[in-house]
Image (cartoon, rainbow, N blue to C red; front, side):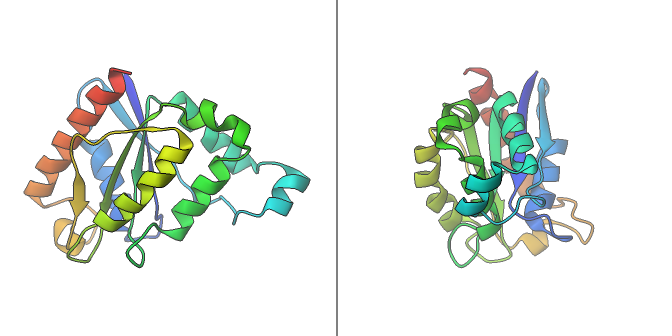
Length: 184
């Protein structure tokens, strides 16, 4: 069984990216599970706090979940044409201490998907993540792309993915990404 850990960059009620992560759970191919992980309890990164108290428990727990998963899926919003601050903050914490990078992220199959109410989807945010993923030592998957534009039309008021084309694109993405992760 291949396990993909999906981390939505937004956990607000009505988040299109949380809805997209839940759709990924529902569309996981046979032999694969998609688990969700929250970044809601992760504090703002502070080097002084890290030096005095170490890595906070929510960060340590999430690091262990990433390390145990077969693959990592970042479900990224796009804020101001770039990465969202809360998700970047979480990744900054997850990369601490640097000596733990290989255990958590080293050669980890990693995918990027995202949804936005705007017409460009999350293309710019996904591109902006690539240098970060390189630095972390992940193994990004480039086989397919999921940039959900006009997300208000793709999901209903309850956050259910109702756009059949997006459902097909997401399903094909997950099929390929799960195979990529299993081949590790």
